[in-house]
Length: 421
Image (cartoon, rainbow, N blue to C red; front, side, top):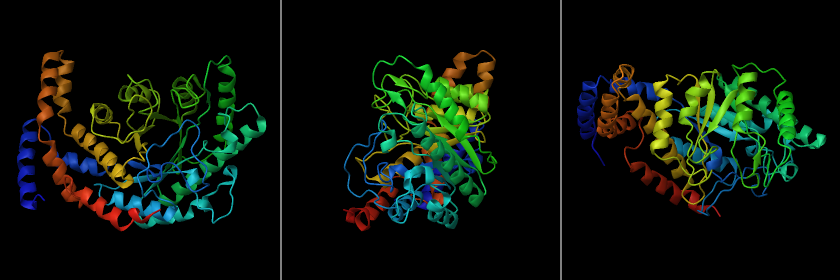
């Protein structure tokens, strides 16, 4: 284990090197401390939820059989707490509607209410954790044919509209309780597996349904509405009703947050370039940061070029107060608490790297037309000692430095998760 004296010495040297580039490392860490990442509840139990024991559907798949997934809300809360204790900073927690606590009574999704998330709100309030929310339009008999809000059957469509309205009320209740807006994100799996003839009809129905879902007025200081697109899903490979173009238009026309998911576009696309493009027309957006490997596979986020590009775009554009950063991955093949910690720490490392960038110097070269210097400087800063700053930041936040957090996860696994059948 690295000693405190050694960490401080390494940081002092790193601080000096960054200062030579005009970067204040203390200020960068202070800004990082104020960034809250919304951790996704569904990593803890493979998107199972507590509504029923039915399997996943709607183009979603959790692969792997690593032992110890959370079986109930108490275990999920304990696991999330353990993960958060190993991540520097104060972060949020994002829930799906299927994570309700119904007391053993069947609750239809169009009847879900704030009372079913009261214990979640109590837990969050006690620990100063802010909550975000998501309606669950998948894994249900009424979505089995691949359609929900764009369903041609008026009764089924109405059921899902009522679910959306109910979830916005839950988001409002969470926002009132926590004193900061809850971001409630709408994603639906609607689409077709093979050649589709009428692409317009379902989209017209979806627009009408969304208008009905968002009709009840909710103060944005309590709840913010977001809409999320997707390129394809399992069972909707040929046609997705809620495409990027559809939701981009809807968000701009109706002043909603546009959700950009890192895995919901063509493999050669990254969401980094979409951030500034969207914010030219929108006040705020939501990010679902994941890692796709060959397809929208929601791998655990790691510090790769795509993640760095996302963080750089946020920081370079001064978008921190307009971009809500959420995570969206679920890996059942590794320790689930470790997955949370790995992904969230990676997101924070990417943001720290961006905060430590001498952006003004780079922009100066770019605006002067000195593209040679721009490229050369971008390469040189890649070897600046960010690791020393990150380790010092973790120490200041009271969380394990370097890989020491993994020992804590292994111990927790031995004491708790390994005992779950």
